Length: 406
Ligand code: TTP
Ligand code: MG
Image 1 (cartoon, helix red, strand yellow):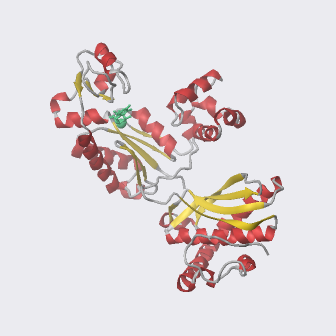
Image 2 (cartoon, rainbow, N blue to C red):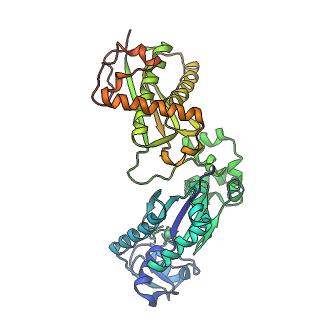
Image 3 (tube, rainbow, N blue to C red):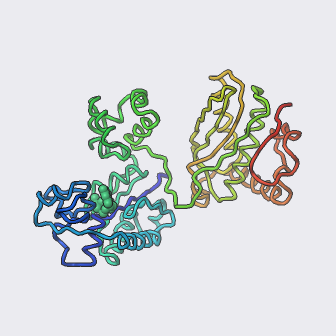
């Protein structure tokens, strides 16, 4: 099932706070940032002021020349912080999957919430209404299957907007827009792309990935995916763990496949156990290898379905390991495995098939025994190879293997 993500951003936030406190300012060109004769720039301009060409970042002197009748306000941060807290509290009433991005901007994961509100569109209308009634602000909302498209949608819908991009329409929605509208593309990237003849997001999406990587490194792959409407980032409430990983350095560098796999299995089980303890599922498994010459690589695999099952984590890790070892002949110094893109486990249980459910039950039973008798009380087939290497009982999670040589 496609995710449903909302991006909510308040319109002319600093100005709206001032207007709510002083209704005489409503419907007028208002600028927050400072007095027009002072040095400094516009922090926020009302939409009435924007019709004169005023925008954030413009020098105040320019702003007062373009719009002499504008009302200039110094502004005070505590008022904006209080308003922001009340805004976030309203959003938190609608979904616990809330990720504040800045004072006036947040993502909500609202997957499945249509059963409560009739539709996600109707839920957004309710959110906008509460913000208007309780705070007096207009909010713009974008709804889409991923963060990047939701953000572009809310931006495009301003002011007082609501724009929903249907699943499957992400790429065609973005295609006609100029590249500068895509989050992650700043002034410099825009100039380079324009120099390459790339002006729209649609053109960016059809560029060869290698060319983007050669210009922008890893960011090239990210903006390429974004341009295609692909963005796996989860909505991450503050404080939630973003990833879990375990790694270990061998006493002696090794090329022994069974030792590498056994160690990977052991580390994968530690990661899986921690994942289940946190009540999370993972969508992304990452293998880390450091070779004898200290070159370090990481390779990731996206799971078809979010999981907290040891076997799934291990299978993905082994696939990555085999691929990496076929490309590099050096012995391995360090091996590690990690999971990221974590989601709450309660949300997707209904989608799991019965064989996965059986594995989950097995993992739960193992966790239970390990909690009682220590992690190494049970060793699965592969990790038995390590029984002489790891101590029988362990206190913490940090793995320092004094010697893994056999
Ligand atoms: P924005 O959401 O970017 O701007 P906005 O809310 O004023 O207008 P809109 O969203 O309708 O386009 O930023 C939120 C607040 O952050 C803004 O009200 C003031 C502050 N801010 C600055 O202080 N300096 C800046 O350069 C920008 C962009 C914002
Ligand atoms: Mg805003």
